[in-house]
Amino acid sequence: MVAASATFAAGNGVFASLIIDTGVGPLALAATRIYGAGAILIFFFLPHIRKLRRGHVLPLALFGLIGLVLGQGAYFEAISHADVALVLVIIFTAPLVVAVYERVHLKEMLPRYAWCAIIVSVGGVTLAIFGQGGMPAISLVGFLFALVAMIAYAVSVILAARLPTVFPPLARTGACMVVAAVIWVFIVPPWTLPFDKLGETTTFAGRFGFSLPVWVAVLFVILVGSIGVYATWVGGTALVGAGASSMVGMAEPVLGAVFAWGLLGQHLAATQSIGIAIAVAGIIVVERARVRSTRATEFDSLAEF
Figure (cartoon, one colour):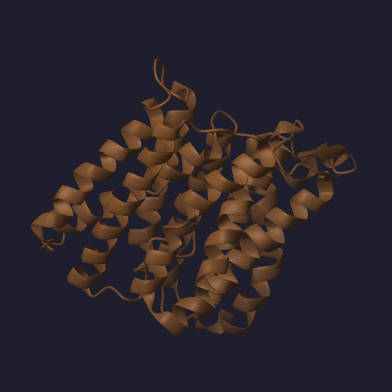
């Protein structure tokens, strides 16, 4: 189930990139994802709404704002300016930021090898960005949006530990989705969404290319890329634990690269692929050390984002 969650999340980026290429704005797509997922996940929250207290509102609102508005908006903007694989590997350096935060703010200790792994991971990301030779493989705008998404991801991981535990995981996610949907109304009102694009046909131009209606791709982003990701992550993590779930979740950047190559025709140089592999390996080492050090088994690097 956890492997399925990582696969769905990687596929979400590829389908989102395809939709954006048809002319749907990144922010409009991010809002559509939250509106659709929120309309479904709210039914997991409503049975527990009587447990809601005033002190629960702020953490839920912050998670919705940072993780599901700022983070999702920046992510879709980033993949509209750069290859999916490069954006994902930048975003997945978030556990490194979380590890540094826990060391500085919470005084948690990490073994020396974990700090070496952080340096190695940053070097891998650098190789992925510059590995094609010459100019960077990602534009400055794309890099900045990916950086914002990464920071939002890291903050949401920290905030996830502070969400009210009186609600089950999917109920918490549903509450955050509702908050995010309300915020998106002021950014991209539902009545301004490009519904006229839904009837168009779009084509995956990669090695395994095929055509499908835009509305099918949008349904994938909502049902598989959102609901599927959360449901399989929650169920799988309950069975294998947060530590193992975190390790498996690190497959997302690699799967994203494979899917982007096969479906979108986005190619990486050999050195860039090596850089992604190095970065992911280093992040896995750091995340494993962080989970062991903090005993924080109630959330991981994929927690409800």
